[in-house]
Length: 221
Image 1: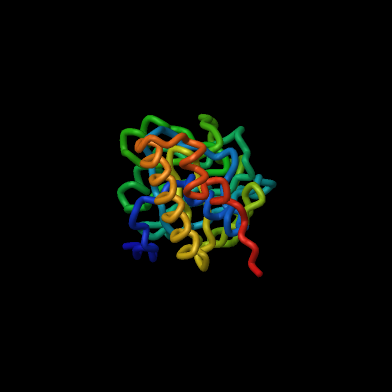
Image 2: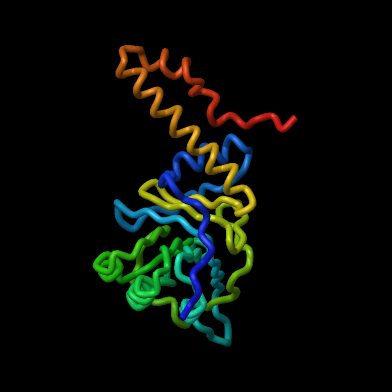
C-alpha cells in the first residue's frame, strides 16, 4: 500500500487567487497559465508528484504505470509539453487514483473519459480534453524530477493548489510564507467588503485597507 504524502497545513482552504497574489507580493512565479478545471466545484491542495512525457521514437514506452508509485494525498502533475493531440490520462487512471486517495491530477496536456472522472468525483485540471490515446505517441520520460510549465520551475514535493480558477505551484520551502501572506490578503479583502457594507465607497474602502499595494512586490532590503 502506498504511503501518504506529507501534507502541509492547508487550514483555511486558501484559494488560488489569494495564493497567486501572495506569490506576486513575494516576487515568486507559480501561476500555471492555460491550465483550468475539468469541471467547476473542484478544489485540491497537496505535495506534487511530477511526471514528464515525451514523444515516442522507435522504442515505445509506458503511459500510466507510474500511478503505482504515487502516495495518497499527493497531487499528480503531468507535463506533456502542452500537447493537445493525444491524451495522457483516462478513465482507468481516474478511478484508480480516486480509490487510492490521490488528491488530484494537473495536466499540461489533455485527458479523456471525462464522464468517468466526473462520476468518480476525481478532480482534474488540464489544458483541454481529447479522446485520442497517447499510446504509441508519447511515453513517460521521467518521474519525480523538476518540470517547468509556463516558465514556472516545479520540484517534486512543492505544494500545488488548484480550484475553479486554475492551478498554482508554491515552492515547499516558501509555503509557510506564502500561506501566511495569502491569509492576510483574504482578511484584508473581507475587511474591504465589510467597510463597503458599512457605507463607504469602494475607493474609500480599498484606500483604507491598502488594497492597491497588496500584490506589490516587497523590497527585500
